[in-house]
Length: 91
Image 1 (cartoon, rainbow, N blue to C red):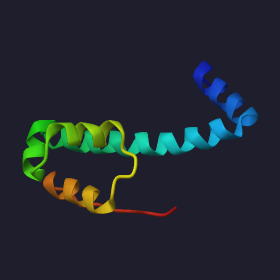
Image 2: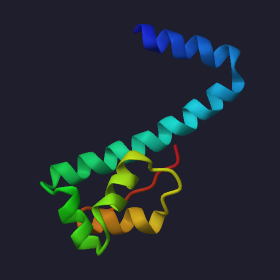
Image 3: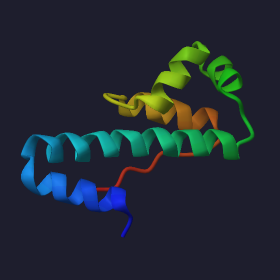
């Protein structure tokens, strides 16, 4: 286990607020990373995706880097613009 993982694990044990914020932030980060990977695998730049969605590059960047409060309808539009489909699972 890395030093960072050890630190996070220990900090989560002693700081409830950190633990809650960390887990929520990580999930939002993960969504942004998945969107960026999907865009890149489609061979598209942020500018190209923005053009397809009739929005600005800054909006795409914000979604990829700060995926908080992204609507499912927005995720569905992004997936469609990338030639993909959106799947939501509760596990």
